[in-house]
Image (tube, rainbow over all chains, first blue to last red):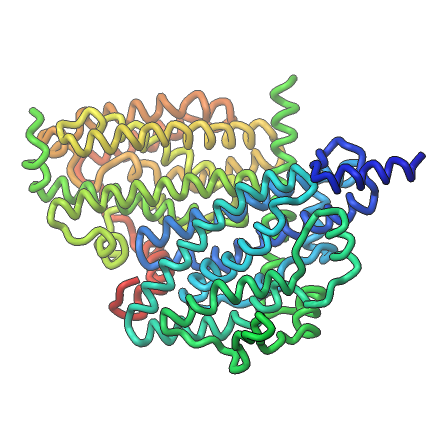
Length: 311
Length: 262
């Protein structure tokens, strides 16, 4: 009785039980999770590129080591998440190579923030401080996810992201306390990233997919709740270091208990993500192609070496 | 013949050696870091990034040692010295080639570094010996990792073996200067900082690589021949500085904006 199985599954989830990779799950649940985790994995990997550009230019030995460690963590998160996605994709007949090919063919999207330019050292700081800060908020909201393998991986990811946030904050504080031209560089970077970060949390409307994910207890908070949490946490911090938030409408509405802000251009940013038309989208997809397709010979060599060793 | 560590710290030859080791580790670590996000597999990306961090951390150790010898502040030594003042072996600053070139360069560097560190670990300088012993533990894993890559690419045959062979040919002329010192190694032995003479280190270098190169189908006798042809008994010639200049121009992309705290 498929309906009885579905009811039993939903009852399990409602009781707060966790689903493991080999448990039975509805197709809809599998597909929603796979899309979420696949995009998360790919975003971690694509998220390495804007910061990677700054590793060779990091201005001190300590900054160089810490930025390198951070980029390594992001790729590592991508790897952990790909493993989770691979297990979900296996019954659908899809493997790791195909999951990575999807980035190059544009079948899978990655977060809007990673389509952006990072033209100065201050951008590397803002990414660590605010983009990772935003990511911590969206990811900790998933820690209680009904799918146990994802929740386990997220626990480690969130712990590492909090180091990233501190790494970003340390870069930011040096710039904020530095020369006037360093502060200007920092304010310019904030101006460049603000709207993208507001968009990062997604539109305030609860889409059908978001509603289903809440029913399945994959996620429990709305986009708007998460954006509000980010504003509550970061608006005072940004102001406390003497930076100005590039939105004249930003204010806390005491009566409603909500932050008011200028809405990002939902349409424009959605196009960037959907069609890979951001200022750096194509360049970064090309880097991924270089890593993945141009080095297919290396992966093939490993398979041949294994065969040769077995003979 | 070992003297006390603090006396060695005052000797300019020893400071020069610290700068050499710092420059080599920094340049190679910098080249490694250019692979971030571009390695053939995400797993390798993570592994290679670890090694890049190790190299830069080792560089920081050597520069701090030079700083302790009164050569200047470690970051300034790492970033602000001109290409013409660098003491590295040319191999460390070469621009990245393909993956075969990358792993083979790393392999030969790690093999030499392991031999050199083992000699420094027996050094009369307490700080030197301590640092070298710690690095040896990390280099052990680098060596295992790179050895596997070299052997796998060689054994795979076809395109991979051809690329590995091309990388070998390209790297060979840089080996005599790699297996040498920016200061006269005899002076380092006299000062007690280096526990063994260069000729012995070179023999250990070849012996260490021989089984791996052979398994990978690469001619170890070519390495022996080129080392013999260029003994580099005194201080090796200064590396031509075009590669280092290009690398430093990138590395100073932020720092060159102005005097500031970063």
